[in-house]
Image: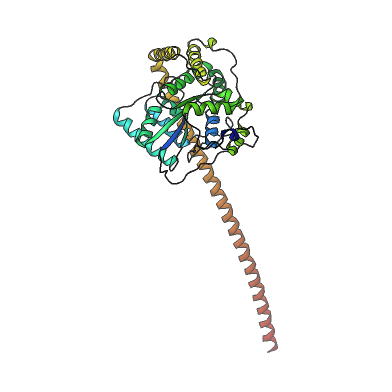
Length: 379
């Protein structure tokens, strides 16, 4: 495929890439894992990869008011990951979900087996399965074990967005304080970096992607060691249609220094990741220092923070289930009311038809009586 023709600037209407599933591939399978924090550009990167030939899961999470274009993540895997985090006393918004919250070996093996089955159910027959769920970032060791058991290799793409832009987005959606959001962002980015060091991986600047996605894809392919599966001219036109600076809904207003120690950690992590996304090879000293500072804070306050995050996550899950049950009940009520109305209408129609038949029978009987009376009178 000539690369120059596929990346000529075009315009097109945005379109969700279809999931391509067929018979199991004869050759090796390679999964593309999009790792990183919620609200950090993972959805945009995933849509790009899907249009470039990677294969989406069977059950996608729909879009909503916070992400109209869709999340491009498997909702069944997201629910599973939430359950796994709660099992270890953590949650998706736990700033101390990194390092990996391991369980006893028997439990760990059971979760890994469930992960394998779920992956195969979502990506059966996919040569280039594309998995994006931010929760999987802090659970990457479990998912890597599952992929290894399935003989699926992995390539990793890590979007890099300024933590304050992520914080403002989470403030609008979840009401989180900026200090919490940038700390959770730091944990996710540290996890994404640590768990992918021995894999082909690419750090992608979110703002740079919106400005010139072709240049970012060229860097991505170089870092991953090969081209994307099917970045055709048609795919490039569709990518042009949805990737634009208008997706930059939140800027990095203010400074991280104002957030105290959480801002210090986030600044160090962002400096390293941004340099990596720009094609540099930054020294690890700053990143290691940030990880050590996060670990120290976890030792101080993690016993208070993580259980609270877990309990809130459990409460949110319970509330979501109650809302689902209420929606089902309301649907059943509406269906029953509709059935009752239809049955009543049918009964009324039958009664009216019977009344008319009875009226006609009465009239016929009256005529017969008159005719009989007349015949008797003549006789």
